[in-house]
Image (cartoon, rainbow, N blue to C red; front, top):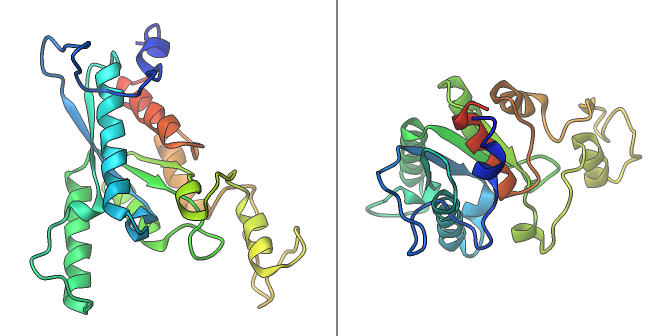
Length: 219
């Protein structure tokens, strides 16, 4: 497995992990299902964002030599009979997403800062749920769809300082609360969930796909 790892993980020139006219599969490969968590569900083109990520998993599968395929589940895959801005609809979404995570073999989360210095709280919950279910959790940081340009995943303490406009190495925020400062991208519980799987926050969606492939290859 280790000998073929570089070839197996090599990104395609056009992306892809399923079959195309130029690539045929002599037999069906087993499928690992990945739940695609993240605040993309709040984007103006939320459905398109999910389709693109799911398609990328399929593309990478087609072009790879992995002995398996990757497929995505997206939070908006949950069908609602009658969407309303009310508690009943909210809880239906919650329960539908929990079911998707239960069906998945792994969770991949966009840990981009969202509405504050930390990541989206719903995504954080989904990471914790997956970890509690014994599923591998992976993360990446992709800011471009939200803020118009890529950005490096700065340390959490630095993002808190930027958010409040306080000195970069301040020990406490303006409310007097201690700032978590361990040199991590986000709260230690979230990074710990990734570390339990054996990885850290990836800098792109494709890099995170590579991490997932390595995990299921047993590398």
